Image: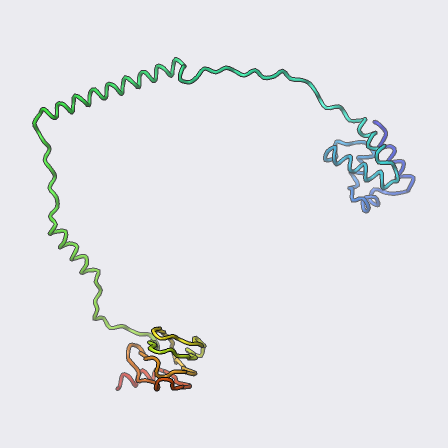
Length: 254
């Protein structure tokens, strides 16, 4: 041992310090401090860490860090500088020049040539036989059109079915701009301007309340498919107009 560990130990004992006290200040673990004093460097992460720990520990003890590092360096074993002979590249024979590859390529070439000769003879024999293959008959176009017409008839839905509504469905078609505030079953669903050409649908279970309408004549209402009378004239303001199931019943009775 070079003696740097013994110097550190004596300096620590002279100051009456424990490993735990030094650890609190230097942040170096106690077992690393003990390893430094015993010069048991194998337990440390590496030479760079070891030098850093030695420098910090020696400064804390009031020692010259460079002297401690110099002692540590003198104890290190020199790295191996054994020279190895240069590698000699192995000369390889091109793949296409190997005998086995040449034989395989020759066999493939013979098979290809033989196949070409065989098919050429077959084709010449077919031409001299005077026999032509008959063309396959095509399906008549009339049957296809009839089948397509049947499919289209199955796809077209019946136009006369009666639409079934659940609850209250109010469809508003606007032919003028109109501002309105609407609640459906107590919940605010509309608060703003709806432009001409817009179609707005409100669906509820109990009631549809038009809290305020800025242009009562600017739209048409269909309740569950049935048109309601106009609520007012163009530009007229209407407040608190409520649609309920009774409104629907009155339409059915009228």
